[in-house]
Image 1 (tube, one colour):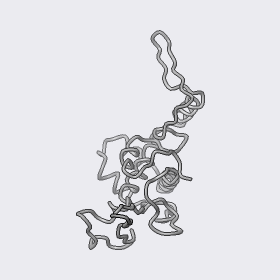
Image 2: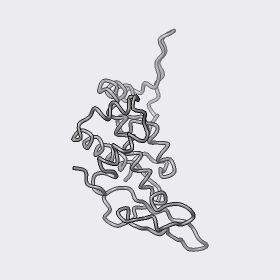
Image 3: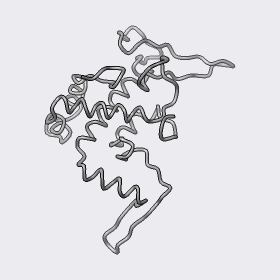
Image 4: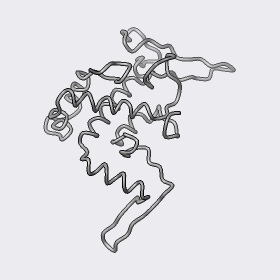
Length: 190
């Protein structure tokens, strides 16, 4: 069973609802997700959450001792001092809090983290194990591109892809787009 705030940003019901609301019934994503047993869905959601937590984000965690990377607190400069945003727990009714037209989930990144966790889990289950292994072998050897006509290969040993890279557990560029506002330039959290 998934535990919010410990090993997941979302419940299984939230993940199922997200997939139903964001994918057509005939899409590969919907068919793949619907074909999984609940226990398998929980496993991939846990793995996805762990992978997201290994990335480096801006701001800081909202609470000391918080297990997951989100919710986060952005610091904004105000004159010589620094002001922080108001925080209301993700587990309370945030509808009463409105600063500048945004909800607390938007300000703390919870909704983004939830969507990213689900999208990453969906991308993972759609990959074939052979595709992950092939990508890993090409990256380890430095091979960045191949071409069949006139046979060409390109190697770049200094390249460090952060996304669509099975080695770091991020399987979709959609995750990068979702998390863009929260990510720093470094690859992993310290």
